[in-house]
Length: 79
Image (cartoon, rainbow, N blue to C red; front, side):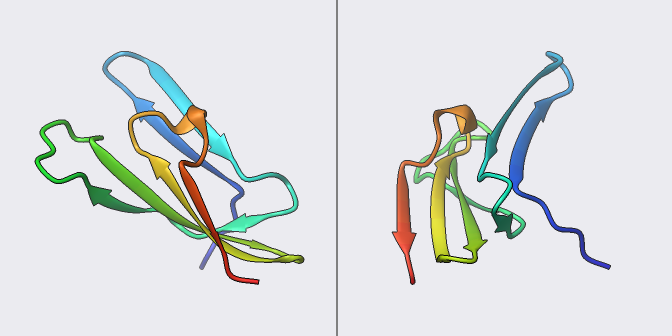
């Protein structure tokens, strides 16, 4: 089955830290796709691509994987 979510979370089990980005309760998001930054060394050195679906339209959100709480660095609105 598939579950519906409206937030992306990152959990560091070693440090016990977590952060998240929430698209809002009016949204449904896709599972994130990780794209490493060119020359990346750290496991979170890259970007998360997340489809966001709302009644008002669909968009592609780009987040920095190392700082989800900062919010999107870009959003592509598709209508």
